[in-house]
Amino acid sequence: MKTPIYLDYNGTSPLDPEVIAAMRPFLEEEFGNPSSSHWFGIAPKKAVELSRHRVASLLNCDPQEIIFTSGGTESNNYALLGIAHAKRDKGNHIITSRIEHPAVLEVCRDLEKHGFDVTYLPVDEYGLVSPFLVEKAITPQTILLTIMHANNEVGSIQPIEEISPLARNRGITFHTDAAQTVGKIPAVVDVLGVDLLSVAGHKLYAPKGIGALYVRAGTEPRQLMFGSGQEKGRRPGTENVLEIVGLGKACEIAQRDLDVNASHLKKMRDLLHDGLRARIQHVRLNGHFDKRLPNTLNLSFKNVDSTRILEEIGLEVAVSAGAACHSDHITVSHVLEAMAVPLEWAKGTLRFSVGKFTTEAEIVRTIDIVSDTVKRLSHI
Image 1 (cartoon, helix red, strand yellow):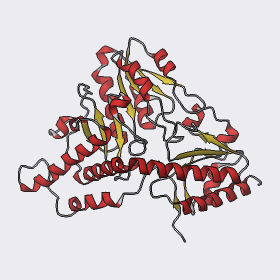
Image 2: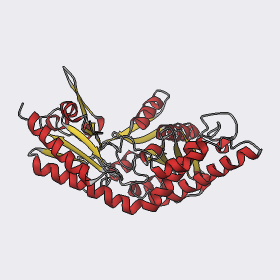
Image 3: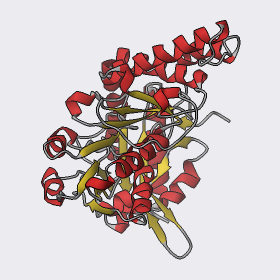
């Protein structure tokens, strides 16, 4: 049996061969603790700092503004919990959107249990947050604003640059979850105007279990972990040198190849979209047509269950569903629900996310497999 075509890059990405090569010495001979004062700690310490510079270069910030974490979830938790508790004496109001990743939404729900007031902003039919509604939601008690850079399901890119002045002019700390954008589109912190930005390594061809949090100089989230003084005391614990090196190399590659990769991603995405539209009568695009990640294609097939589609194509094409169909009910993703996608469309939603290793031959094959399956199921 052939290996299935992989079109779930928003879920995770394979490691880049250059990343594996950069990591190998730290899996083999360079095992030392970077905090050690002896010879064995020298190379690991230098590698950690080189990686910090590489991440900072991609985001165009000072290396000392980068904290290494275990991934996007920890970065989001640190940003939200750290700021909420650090600024608790100034207010208790937080603003976010209804389509955030659970690593943000679940933190907000927990903060509500501890006396914080959270406003969950709606989005329009394209999955976009309105800067007008952000401004309208701000109160004298607002201390934190967290809006994702781009949505992981539909790919819609939020107007972060328009929202950030609303926060900055009122002294409100602004965080963005950029797990899906770093390495795909520019994510320059000064252009975005954010105070904190979360990075997830496994979304940009680095290993799982490594991430980073950008913290603008002068922004001081409360410390959540305690121990030795690693990461300037902000994230104590012996550094995950192997994966930090992987993240650093992945960021260097992403910066080097950003334009070439973005062009390839868009070409593959649009080829897939055009091919499916030509073959299937009832297909709907979810997300903004233009203000969208170059690799993300979220499509709904009318009156077809996505779980049935996945059952049919699962051994040939790897994608993710936007709804789960059970015996007595249908569970639609919170993103599609917030976008008010009608149920007859939402229940047949698939997310295709291409990557830099995706080939045209794979896309052509996917068009055949998916279109044949959808047409067959729609007549059952």
